Length: 297
Image 1 (cartoon, rainbow, N blue to C red):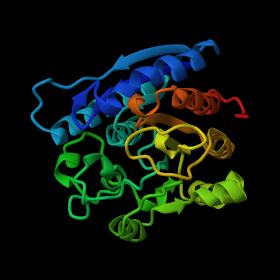
Image 2: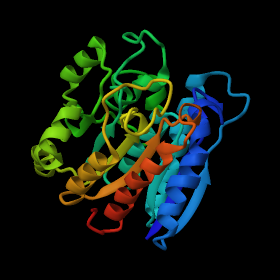
Image 3: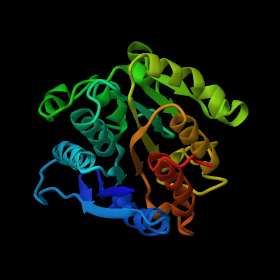
């Protein structure tokens, strides 16, 4: 299989700082060993923005644009796009826009693993963290002007998005999810009921609704910090294990193709033993197996 790995080593507009520093260890210890041992044809592409970019928001929207272009070009060349990013909104908004531009304009759905809902807007956020607005951006609920300038972007229906294992969700985010129809699969649903029970009805709905490809987004802070390791400074307790993510990927792949995937939100300063990349390798393996048409274990 041909693969295009798209590296976005930025955190809040700064390159190779904070979670931006996590891209290199995820690449070297999770992505490359996993895909190379299977003999895939892997190409790497690292994105960058003007070092004089004056604002976090300007850098984020520039990275969204460049990610979308890289994803569309990968798909046009017959390669599976895998994004490894510091922040999640350039990865997610870029990936979905690239998929809609090149592969399935009206047939994309999103499964978003994250400890946080990422459904804040500038009006609801208390932290003013742009990276907490990725799902709201995809739904067209904020930053409409800059997103309208992103070639190929249009708001994604909330019914086409599922948030998985979020443990920190504000009232403003809950209201946005109810208003837009974004579905929520909590940790307990996967741990106690399993992926087939949690996602079977959703996937059936998507097939009937014309979904043709799925983007799998994994913020590594979805993993349980006590059983795996803290992934970043925003760690929340009681998360998933890699096996839970693998089960979801397998359930999806049995019903719909996986068009692109992403890993994001790893800050190695919070994981001195390097346990997150080891866990992430299992997740990468499941996405790559699914994209290559191998039944994920």
